[in-house]
Image (cartoon, rainbow, N blue to C red):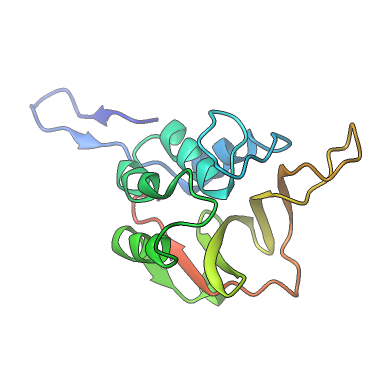
Length: 165
């Protein structure tokens, strides 16, 4: 959806802003793809790799991609708060209770903010789950999944992507 639109009568062009629905539709294409702790694959990947790939495919989210890419490939970023700080610079931090479909949730794992999920509908998240079982093999090999947000999961931070309409 990236590109520019104009009315054809002037040289003024306006960037096309992607919608939350387009971003979520792109994310959902990855459901069932394998988890990879270092991320970065065009298919599958970790929670951050999935976000970057879907943001690229949606288009119009270059700031988010630029903020997240330096942290790709680290099961644990060198600076444990680097991802949180990057999100704070390039997205609007909101209260987790105010998050809407298309917003990002950040969860602490081992006391550090390092797992991302995207709300796809009220009370439902999509993320790369290292422990998800492959339905074909029954093994816990990890997959990109969408499911209800478990009541025991408490997001520590939430972010709204300003480019999404």
